[in-house]
Image (cartoon, rainbow, N blue to C red; front, side, top):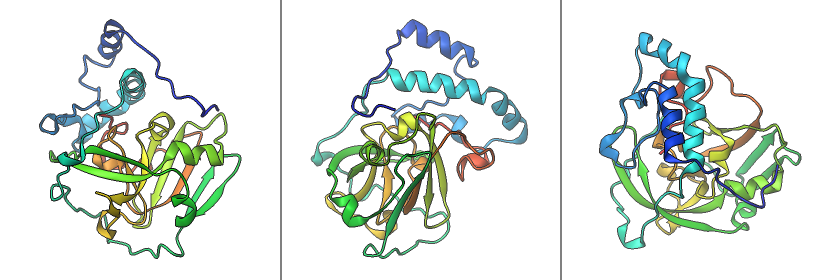
Length: 253
């Protein structure tokens, strides 16, 4: 797998509309507007009947979302003056874990040629990427936040995923779990962040490491990440905590 270039495949508007029509005229297309007031109902928990329909269309749905994702330009970034310091709500899955950053090790393994365990010192020695982006929650609120950290792309260059790796699992210290397609994980705006608004990441926001990206909805952005696992296959019934409850898997913006 080549990591020296990041290229998007280009599709015309006509092609994208044709692909979308295959998925039921967008009914099953989960891409979400960057306007948080227009979050699609498909991201809300589904009843059993809707879940059966979703299961039928999900593989096609994912393929179309990936095509649209590849055709999009980078997500908008904002000036520091746009930061909304009090808008990012704090929600926890189970309990808030407290991790000693001095003994912390990030495990990166799976379908890679060079599995690693990295300390925070190791991670902070890599290029610091800072971006001011909009965090959008499926519940309908949003916040403009400055995140600073290391790109997943740069970590992938170290561990060298094998050619068959198509997905990335993220495990958290609070037992939360998520899975991403590899293209989204290696997008240049996907970070493992250790700073928020120019300061060290607060514990309640996911210290020492959390996912930050403007291309996914908030429930995909795991906090307290302790393991990054590259894999060839998704494990059904372990797609992600909320996905296993009926939320949409790709959750792209």
